[in-house]
Amino acid sequence: MAEIPVGTRGEETRLVTTENAISFLGNEGARVLSTPHMIGLMEWTCRNVVKPLLGEGYDTVGTHVNVAHLGAAPIGMAVTFTAEVIAVDGRRVTFRVEAHDEKGKIGEGTHERTVINVAKFAAKMAEKLGQ
Image 1 (cartoon, rainbow, N blue to C red):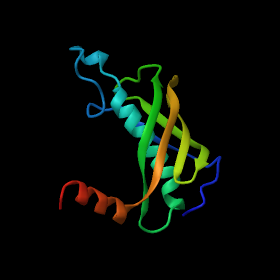
Image 2 (image 1 turned 90 degrees about the vertical axis):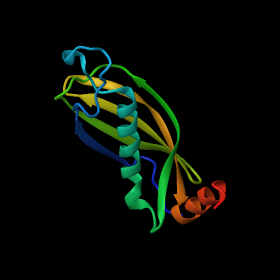
Image 3 (image 1 turned 30 degrees about the horizontal axis):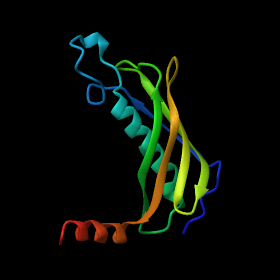
Image 4 (image 1 turned 180 degrees about the horizontal axis):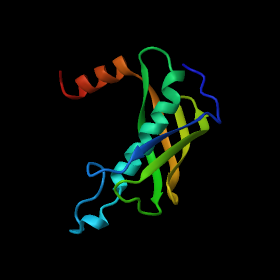
């Protein structure tokens, strides 16, 4: 298993677009980054922080999310997602996550991922499907 140091961190920036914005408020000017997309981008950033540290055939899957969506980021605004490893317990890796738009913090919390052997994971899923 790979060594994942506490303190390892990374960030990614994404633009809020019609594809990741809410659409249910009925007013085009009220479209903002959706909570599910914000959380998904936080998870993606966490994965990308540790993926280069993992051996061939290994990856991570999300197992726990505890995130608050603090503010709205409108279409056209850039959002930067940061992730920092704050704990490692065997295969479990816990991250502090934040999202900032061009005006300030819009989300924060923690996220846990588990390191998996992709081939073993796929075999378990095939077994679950009865294949």
